[in-house]
Length: 464
Length: 98
Image (cartoon, rainbow over all chains, first blue to last red; front, side, top):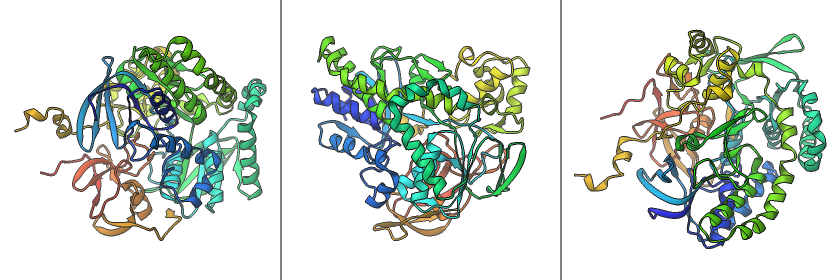
């Protein structure tokens, strides 16, 4: 690895791959850093190594990734797998660790394409072994061919739940129930966006086809579910929930939940990029212009890390950001940039037609976001409950960083990834600052844990 | 709770999970191997000692911290199995072995 590149891209999912290929195609020296051992991101995870049989169970959208990855393999791009980025600053210095050795490199342009994570949404019992994110279930399936053995309950709200159910169905997994926590009145909320969504109707068609197939297979989807609760001693034993005023209990040792995805902003926040609260996507997203420029010169962001748009939009945004980097580096002029980006911009706009509808349809109700039950753990690391957070707010701590200092909520190893948004929602609902004003947890490097030995490896000359 | 679709993988390695030798497919993450082995919880929390297991499997939740080859605080979802690897539950705060 060199210590300087014209362009460094963080993340080898659809956005990072498309950007790297586009930039290298125009002769730029590009380093592509990725934490996984193989390219594809979470969406196309294990795309190069997956057995054909399993790949076919995952569907055509997944298989699409193999083309992106093969283009990377045929290119001159310096690709560094197993590389974790733990620091980024406005001087465009990148701290990374690879093979247990840390390094600092610099770049003229940096593109963050580090994707999304699942929206953490605490409910009673969500910390029990046996409760996992639906995305975790999908990763086990994609990358390892591991599926539920004795049945599974899927619960939450969002397209991934449906996709995973469909994939499980094809793999012969017993689905005990799908619990849909989407409020029925979301249908009304989404209705005004339907005409525009029909312009990207293939997404809706696919969703309906999945639903139909699941129904035909006799898998019951229970709608209008609330008060989800997981119970068990050392391991999940049962779940309970309310439907139409009636309480139900279901025995299961595996529950996979999903409440949508949000941008993973740990690195962009550590760098100091400005972020805004997006009330439609119900998450923070970095401020970006139409080419992906963040509020810091030289830092671009593309893909779901910049706002949720899905895999196809990520590819387009990646290519557009690469053009912008080329333009910033004077490899192409503004007119070339605009001309070369025209198609991607058009396709991206078409792809995004479905988003406002999906965002309204799968809008997470405020009641869920602010964790009604005082006893529910919000901070999984430090075991801080919703009640303790409310108590801190009642004691006059009205912004999230104050609550963090007061309660230790967010001071554990995950650095607030799982609790920050929840804390802000609780504060906003308890009479503190609104989410947009209350601000987000400050991000600081190292954004992933680093051993002292790894840190010391930055200065090999000082070794004895 | 979980099973492998292909129970006859081409290449395997032998790791030790909580003292038990287990043959697992090469290329698996430690978290996947541990989940498939059915040992249940993979750590206890430093605050209340309650049992936890992998939750997100993509490196963001830090629930899967385990002791791998004697090193505490390793994200099991980010580490890959290797021949002879020892994998242990982490009880409470990770302590460096000296």
